Each structure stands twice: as C-alpha cells, then as structure tokens.
Length: 300
Image 1 (cartoon, one colour):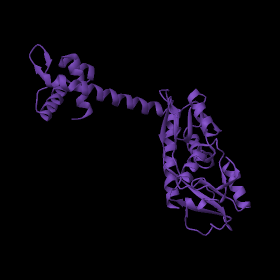
Image 2 (image 1 turned 90 degrees about the vertical axis):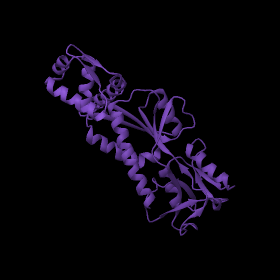
Image 3 (image 1 turned 30 degrees about the horizontal axis):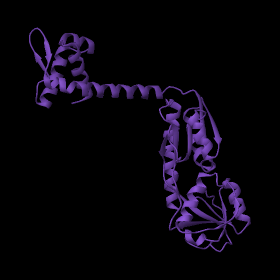
Image 4 (image 1 turned 135 degrees about the vertical axis):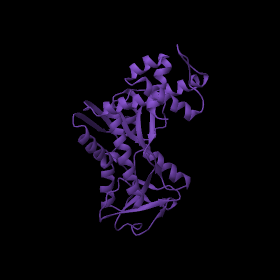
C-alpha cells in the first residue's frame, strides 16, 4: 500500500462515486477501481460496497479512513514545509550565548547559516547565563545557547551534549605533567573560579563539595579568555570547559575525575512560541556542529 492508493481511497470515501472521484483525481475510473481492488486484496477485506447505483464505505473502510486522512495531512504538511524552506529566508535572527559558546560553536554555526541564508541578518549577544534566560523568556532573543536553567516555567530546553570540565594550569605548574587529577586534590589549591553569579560556579562548587574539597579562591573571573591569560602568568589553576580550552605550548589541560564536573549545554527557546524557518534552520545547524565538536572533545 502506497501514498497514492491512500489518497485514492480517501477521495473515493469522500465522493462515494467512482466517476466523481476519478474526475477529482484526474485519472480514469478503471485506474481508480484497479488501485482500490489492490488495496482490498492487500488488506484482505472490502473497503467499499459497490452497487450499480452507489458506492458505500464498509465498516473496515470507516476504521481505516481517519488514519489514512491523518497520514496524508501530515505528509502534505511536510511537503509544504520543504517547499517553504527552499524559498530565500529574510529577517533577523537574535541569538544569546554565554562566552564559552562564542569561542568556537557560535562562529561556526553563524558561518554555515550565513552561507545558506545570506538574506537573514544575525545578531549575537554574549551574555551571562541568567541574562540569556531572561531575554529568551521575554521574547527579546529568539534563541539562547546556554546551560540547563533551574527554572523552566515558560522555557523549552533541548540538551545538545554533556560537556566535561577540565583543569587548566601553566606548563610549570605541579599538576602540569599529571595525566589526570582527582577533584579532592584541589583542596587548598590556589584557584581561579567563576563568580558566584555564574551557573558554572554552581556546578564546580557542587563537584568540590561532594568530596569536601575547599580550594583557596585567589581570583574570580567569568571571562574564559581572561582566566586562561591569568593561568599562563601564575601558578593558579582554573576549571574550564574542555571545548573552550585553547591549544598552546604554555598551557596544560588535565582531566578531572572522581567526580568530573559536567555541564549540559543546550538550546533555549520560549515554550509555545512560533518558530520561524530561520530559527529552525539555525537550530538544525547548531545540533550538527555541536555533535561534531563533542566528538572531537571526546577524542582528545
């Protein structure tokens, strides 16, 4: 049974006449009759009772009709969306992201999106996670790329991947030659941590608290670039995203374990809000690029 036969069946059920149904479908009555008989042979039950004067749908046909109608409607809707997607997209797409994602993920996604939809203007704002949440919720941003918010009353969050946090130290730091460091070993170590307003700080604090580790917080910074610059110049360690960690000879990236601090980046949109074709296209690119970056991160 194929979609063409389903369409023939639905039209015949609506018209209750082979003549009218064939005219509506732009086919011959013999073709229509043949296709309906093929359907009935496949099902093993008659779909219509035929007389010389009328066509009546059977109980089996009545059972099939709602599902067939729904299937055709969904296929037609999908075809309309595909046709619409082939038209040039216009307008403005407003994106909010925290610093980590603006390092690699967002530039790559915006580059790919711009190549596909050059008529769409893209506005990217680098914000702290609470600001991303607030502006998506208010409708001032179309989409946010951030971490899973604690409160989701009017928000929809789609996780992209699970991200490992790692220890960044200078090349001459005592931990620089280690293959891995247990989180408990950060106890009393001089560290740079994000500010307490940061969602990342909460994740790091939870990991430290789970093993009763209390490092000495020598500095608090939310900028990853500033944090890495300070790590290079001092004997301070920092916990940063593996994906945001720059590759450099004067910096060492050491995995943390027992436990490994984990973050869940994702796509944040307003629950129930209509999504433009531009937004759907950007999110599709975001999923694909994020998956590629996650795989690269795991291979390191």
